[in-house]
Amino acid sequence: DSGVTQTPKHLITATGQRVTLRCSPRSGDLSVYWYQQSLDQGLQFLIQYYNGEERAKGNILERFSAQQFPDLHSELNLSSLELGDSALYFCASSLSIAGGRETQYFGPGTRLLVL
Amino acid sequence: GQQLNQSPQSMFIQEGEDVSMNCTSSSIFNTWLWYKQDPGEGPVLLIALYKAGELTSNGRLTAQFGITRKDSFLNISASIPSDVGIYFCAGSSTGNQFYFGTGTSLTVIP
Image (cartoon, rainbow over all chains, first blue to last red; front, top):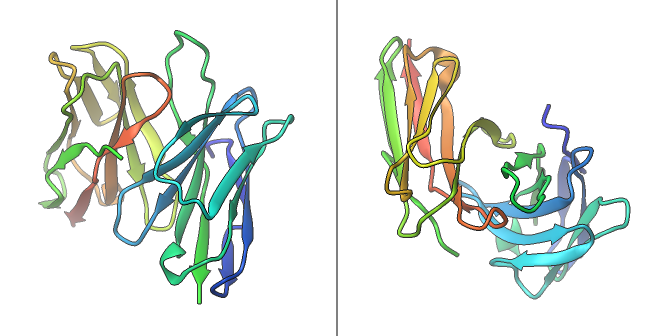
């Protein structure tokens, strides 16, 4: 168990809908990262938040947004869903202290199926 | 976004054999991480490397941070059936954003 939790584990929805994925980082970790993994694909970095603020942005679509709350949990919002958004969405967390040795610990993922 | 070149893409080996895989980047990194992912599960951290030339072991797994800082290697000795999965490397130059390899799919034949 990595200590990173994600809910829900599975999500089935229809095209055009909006969903929210939730992530709680490991205790003490300040950074949260979101990744998308499509079938047989690698991990595509979407976005990073550090202590409530956006720190880095990857291949995140404009239909997607995220935020990190004061208690450090994060939500990834996916709107106007398309069939191609079906994927595993992972959250990872890290301590992110300047000069520190970084590692990322992954949650179990949310499997999204858009029908 | 940037992806690392990871090879081989897949491996089919007999139980008991040793395994080697590597990851290369066009950029210099100061951190290399190796993960194992089972189907439908989240990647699990195996080994973290922070210094060029560093050699770190975790049981039967050994990873090395390449001297050029543009590559890393993972070896698995005496493979067993539970080693089956996809192995990913990840590298970072800033300590913030990590770039992931394309994965090596390992199949162990009993």
